[in-house]
Amino acid sequence: MFARVSTIQGKKEQVDQEISYYREQTIPAARNMVGFKGAYLLVDRKSVKSMGITLWDTEKNLQASAAAADKLRAQASKVADTPSSTSAQEADCECPSVSEQAENASV
Image (cartoon, rainbow, N blue to C red; front, side, top):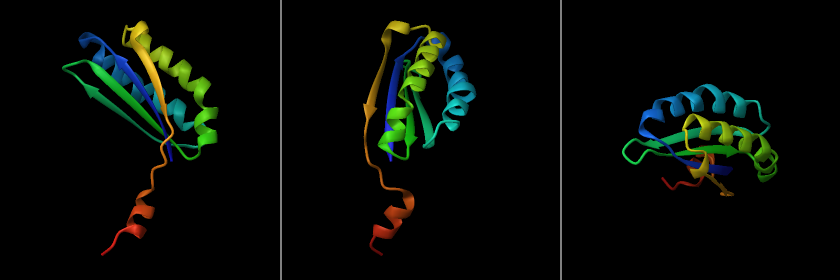
């Protein structure tokens, strides 16, 4: 699996809107993309920093989703009201699936 990690430094009064946007817009849009396997949003309410992580089956599908991800990230930064502090980091990490981990575990 491959992951895309996006970070946003938001504002306290926008955190709940940012979470709603991720649930209602980002995840449904990503589900329509080829190779999408899952998503997580981690939010630190004290620092008001959030990290969105999307998972992809292949590097090719991760790369193919880049333009759509850029648009979603731009929209999310508007919701967070911090367009200049949005950054994205592509993390091409191969992660074994749960079934692969179970197969490799010694009992």
